[in-house]
Image (cartoon, rainbow, N blue to C red; front, side, top):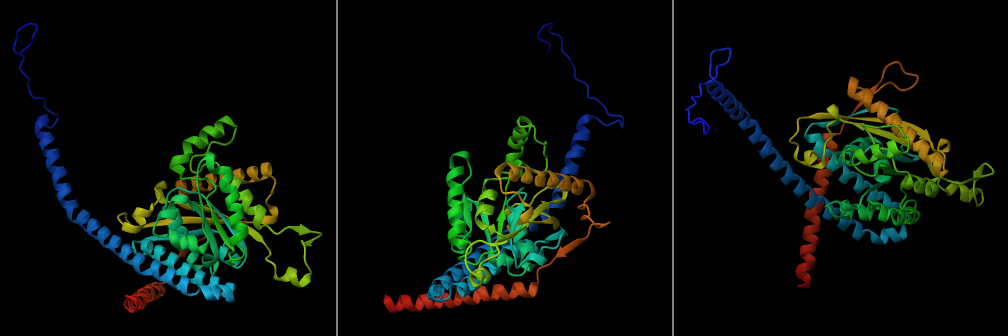
Length: 403
């Protein structure tokens, strides 16, 4: 009823070009959508069941592996006093196995890695720092997989990670191993850099560490991109989309502590025998660029639950000698900015072509598929389960003896 004229207005159904009314088409669309949903239901149900099974497996894995690691470390404390180098060798080996288990969660879900650029196996025995772009929590898992076939590097590395990881299931392992938890924010920055310097001086060489992993951007790409672009515009710096401008405070501290000082062409201080026993210091910077297909990064939830389709993550390496890296603040900042501008170009090329550009001197880019041995994974899982059973029986025996 029209309120102004009192006339009754009849609504006539509209018709499409096919002669069907809108209501009929809506009903047909709803039927099609319902049919598609019913077809998808079994697949989605299987994804849910698989995710729950994988989550249960992860819980079981942590319950047997992490307590066993802690028990071994406690029992081996006398060896730490008598032969510190051997103790940290054993601890590093168990640490590598634990990281291998985390890597296997993605491996079993079909999340593999393709490596590009220079071969970093050649410098696995030297001291090196990895500078990595940071997109999501899955970056850490990806590196855990990449480093498994790099000799002892994964057993002798230190991670610099957000302090929140201290409170995860893996936190106790990282604390024992000597990883550094850094608190983000301007109010904490100066204090955290001092703590990092002290941590490296007290733990890096005393625990026979050789590699250090750093994410210079200081946070995930999606969280820092807008702030970074605003800072770049204000300071007349390049506008970056696939990476953010790096922070150089932690890099400067690491270089100042770990790079061997030179005096008159030789290492500073001490006689010839003493110099021979000293570390050569940090020798290499490994510029590491992680790229995900369609720029869709993996997170730790996906890595654990495996609900995404199998995918290949691509990792590109470039190696720079430390002697070519400036140590002065302004020069170091410019050097780091240049590396991340180059990362931007690498990622732009990858997202356009699906591959990284060739290394200088090569006509075509060469990639290497990174593989984990299922036999090796079976052995370390078996060792973890058997160790857990052993420690449970030992603790139960002493409990009954005491109580």
